[in-house]
Length: 472
Image (tube, rainbow, N blue to C red):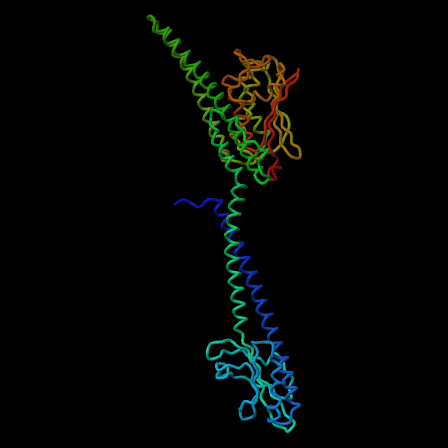
């Protein structure tokens, strides 16, 4: 099922909000008007009742009331909605004005205000006549001079008020409907206009392919709220572009490095098969091919390690250990190789570290193997460790030629080669070009970093591990 568009959703929300506001405000205004109208009508009823009772109490008897009927009727003249009826104690009508048959025949029950009490609007009651006309009625008593009591009833017909309020309510409903439609239309237009940059972003993103990852979305016409989104998207494109470039270079270098041993094996085998060979020559061929197979195996193993090392959970066996002890073990392992190369290995410093021991050994071993290959005879290789407030630093330093400063970062790239001879100022960067890349991957797994320093006297590879609370 297709979902509703964001523009329509926001426009409907805007219209619903407008409807709610119209409803609340309209109801408040309607109730306020209804209350004000009722209060004003009740005030007219109370004033008419007060004046009528005052005039009636000035009269002597019922006959006198009949004789002054015009004077009493004047209290409700000028307002067609008001009616007056004065009756004696037996219910006989003495004076009446503007009282129709329906009102006369209606039964209105309520308490009459005694002649001794002040008239207020609290005594007014709402009623309905027999012909369904709404009225408000106030009944009061007036004591004549001869002591008899007359009943005064003031009635206000509310039909005109109901019609007024009904028309007002209908207009509010009409205004609400029109307002909601206008709100929806205007909201739809404004939201569509406001979301236009998203369409432009989508069109720009649709043009991005693996062939043109250098495309970026311009931010000059983007709303402020979308700038973080565009910046993040452009950063993602930059990362993808860099990853594709590195992957392409990595693939090319891998193919080149794998092609060399395969070509060697194929060439040697073709030469051997060109004519008959002695058993010794076939054995030499098999030994050569075995060396090339070992080289391929190491290369494949390193590539697989780098692929697995991309997962943050690869370093699972984290524990605290003595760094100096591990460095001495590594130095002892390389003792035979160092003797053959005519170099000495020295371990200095002390410290403790929390890391994966196997990965730690592999990183240091890669650096030490590289140092043994590049240290001149009778040279010195130093394995040292020292700690500061933030890091535990392990340094592999060897005497030898200086590495150009511009290459100190690039030598950590996978399969990086400077020239066909694969020599960096007298330093080969590794037989497979993966050793230093593995070191950097291992450091990334430990939230640390690796870097190199080089001068005229020596070259130093430094591993900086974060110093954790549980690794004092």
